[in-house]
Structure formats: C-alpha cells, structure tokens
Image 1 (tube, rainbow, N blue to C red):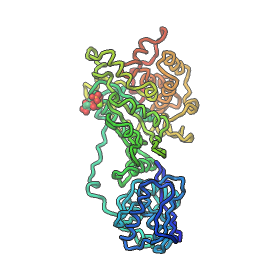
Image 2: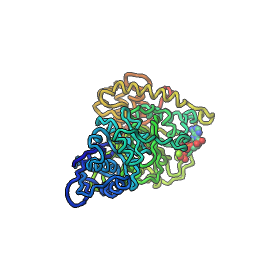
Image 3: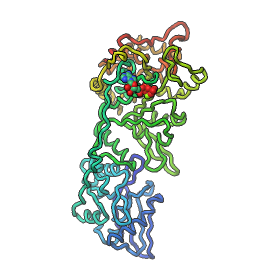
Image 4: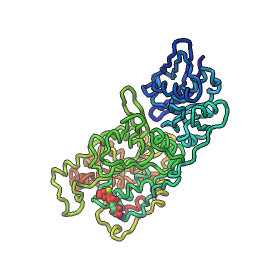
Length: 534
Ligand SMILES: Nc1ncnc2c1ncn2[C@@H]1O[C@H](COP(=O)(O)OP(=O)(O)OP(=O)(O)O)[C@@H](O)[C@H]1O
Ligand SMILES: [Mg+2]
C-alpha cells in the first residue's frame, strides 16, 4: 500500500514542501530512501526502523521504498524522520492514511522513539502556513518558535506514539515550561546616546547613517568614543516590523542554538571579533551555519578595529554588501541567505592611533602607507559616511551630550517615514538602497548643488559611485531636515561627511588642501553642523 506524509526541506532560508511517499510492497525485506537525500537523511532508515519497533508498532518485514518528492529539491538533515515513520505506519495500515493529509510532520527520531526538535522549525512552520496546512507536529523544544506563526495549530509530540495519537485526533502533549534560566535571562541593557559627550560630527553622521541605513566608517584616536557610538546604533534605529522580527528569528532557527520564544523588535547588532574567519563572517562552514552577515540581517554589522581584520575576510563582504544576500557554495549545492545590513566600521587613523593629535604620531611613512591599504578602493567606495572623531572638543571636556537616543530615534523614524512614503512603491524603504534610476527621479539638485558635486569629482575626490553615494546621503540629510528638495546645504554636508573628507590618515584632507588647479573643493562644514540635521 502507498501512503503520503507532508514535511518541509530547509534550503538556505526557504522551506520547500516535501511529500514523503512510502510504498510497502511484496519482496524481500528491504528499506530504501530515495529522492536526492543526503547521507544524513539516508541514516533515517536505522532510526525509523528501531523507533517504530521500540514504540510497540510493527516494522513491516517487506520491501519498503520511501521517496522524498520532488526529486530536484535537496534534502539534508534528520528532520524527515517523523514524516517517514508516520508514512511507514500508514502504508502498513497501522495509521489511517487520510490522517496524514492536512498535517506537517517535522522532527528527528531517537532510537527509543523520542521526537527531537530540529533546526529550522520556525522556517518549516512558516512554509506550512503558506502552503495552507492547518497543523504542524513538532518536537517540544522548538514548539514555541513555531507558535509565532499566526493561524497555524502547533501540536507537541514528545514521542512517536504521541504523533500517532495526535493524527488520530487526540490532544497534543503539553508544552514544556519555559526553562528558569530563559525566563530570568537579562536582556542586554540598551545603551543611550546621552552617554556620549561631544563628537558633534560623529554623532550627526551616526544619526544620518541610522536614518538612511548608510554604511559608515568612524575614524579617530583611541578612547574617543568610536565603539561607544556604534554600540548605541540599535537604540536609535527604528524597531523591526513584525515580518522583519520573524525573519530575524527564522535565521536563528536555522542554527542549532536556542531560539528566543518571543519576537524581539530591537534590530540585531553583530560585532564579530577581528579574528573572525571568512566562513565565520559569511557562513558555510557546515550545514545550518549562518555567518555574521546573515545574523546581522535587518540590523548592524559592526567591525571594530578595522585594520586588524584579514584583508580576504573584508573582501568577502563585497557580495553581501552589493546584493543584500549571500550565496554559500557547497560541494554540490548552493544556499542563499538574506544579508541586508548596515555596515559600521571603526578604525584608528594610523598604527599608533595618534595621527590626529599634533606631535604625537610616531608612525613611519611606510607603516602608514601599509595601514591605509588595509581597506581596498572598492571597499571604500561602498561606504557613505566617514566621520572623524575629535580627540579634544569643548563638549567632551565639559561632559556635555548632544542628544539622547530617544530624541535621535524620533528624528530617524520621521526621516524613515518620509523615505518609505516616497520609495515604498518601488519596493525600497531606505535611501541607501536607491538605485541610479531612483536617484535620478528623487534627487534633483539645484545649480549650486550640482556645481559642488562636479567640483568634488573634478578634484578626484569622488568616483561616479562615490557621487551617487553622496546623493543618497544628501537625500537622507534633507529627509532629516524635513525638506522635500535636496538643497545645496544638504549636498555640502554629505560631501563634508563623505570620502572627500578622507579615510585613514586624511587623504581627503590632502585633496582639500591641494585640489587640482587653484579651486578648492568646498567641503567645509557649516558652523551649525548639528543644526544642519536637527
Ligand atoms: N565621547 C565620549 N563621551 C563619553 N565617554 C567617552 C567618550 N569617548 C570615550 N569615552 C570613554 O572612554 C571609553 C572608551 O571609549 P571607546 O571604547 O568608545 O573608544 P574608542 O574610540 O573605540 O577607542 P579604541 O580606538 O581604543 O577602540 C568609554 O567606555 C568611555 O568611558
Ligand atoms: Mg574601540
């Protein structure tokens, strides 16, 4: 007899429907699993056979074939066990075949018949809901994450017998209590911008970056507040929407670590150590291993002490930065994950750290040149804002903060509303993601603004892509100021905070001092820098 059970294969970030067809036929006892199943899935034979017997059912002494369809979707991991076991029971008339029609089964079996929750349960539950299933039967440990999917009944099965009972119409096993340590788990304190003294230019650039989701590199001497500022970004970014929060949880669900049982609306902030490997940053070391760029999706990827990162690791960031996703190539299969994040970098201006402090830098020209090359031209071209932190500023000395996170977040949210209203119909929500066509449509400069931009280009301080980046930043500055039009003051500000201002050891400042010809690129800041935004 033939029976069918439903489950899902996790392919990168997607759940693909899989039908487990089991045929119990005449012939010498044999149990085969076919349908593009990896070695991990084929091991299900031994687990399923033993679990069925240990739970008091009969494992038919016949020729059994389990086909995981469709045959062109790769199946990995042990989460197919429960569906295969139930299909075997239905095909051998120990369970009514019709009972399997409307439920999705997702979980691994122990040899004693215990159902182990599998990585990707939330992704599978979302797939089940989308495909119109009413019920998913899952292991207890990850049932709470599946329950976050609206309109889906989640039934907990501690053992294979429980799953059979549920399919017969009986009630599910009780949901286990939330472990004590999870309930008491302290949330990381939310850090406030009100702790940062002074740093007018850097605070302003941080707010602009948050408002338009721009990439930013902070440069400054040790102890000026670069790390402090970056860590405060989540406090001024808009909270995640419901769907974004589900995406973030799905990403955690793909890994084997514990998944929070409720949605968190604070944007992810990932700050990998500079010893991180390329696989750690991008992912792919093994199945279900998502890299930092994926964990930072919808949030911030912060690389502190930029010069310490291995250049090939930084180079690997180019694809996710460009595409908003990352494709991991494995032996015979590619998996794609979302990776749209704001890149935040922090660096000292030179190896000793004190190039900004008059008379204190002891670096040789050779070591300086080597230091500057750590970030390649193409990488630099993907950064929008380059604020330099001051090592001494009156507000710092006086212990005066320029704003609070609450106030900055309000400004950011208003600016984001303006961007969404303008761009949502193009499928874009923030200025940083505007393509050239949208730039042409929404960033029309007046004559003075155009003049300023061409001057910066003529000076060699901006590439074409750099000019586009300056336009996106100028649009964000206009949105923060509540201005429909992008005015020359906004362009001037964008240029003053952009690469023309220089990266590691002020190349931009040199450009400013020695522009081609006698003209000077006008990237001076207005006196009221903060007011240009506020
Ligand atoms: N602008 C500031 N306002 C208030 N406190 C500051 C400021 N800058 C530095 N500090 C103090 O100095 C400490 C170190 O700051 P932070 O780690 O942000 O410096 P940094 O610029 O990242 O330095 P490094 O280059 O060594 O990483 C902070 O914990 C804070 O106590
Ligand atoms: Mg630091």
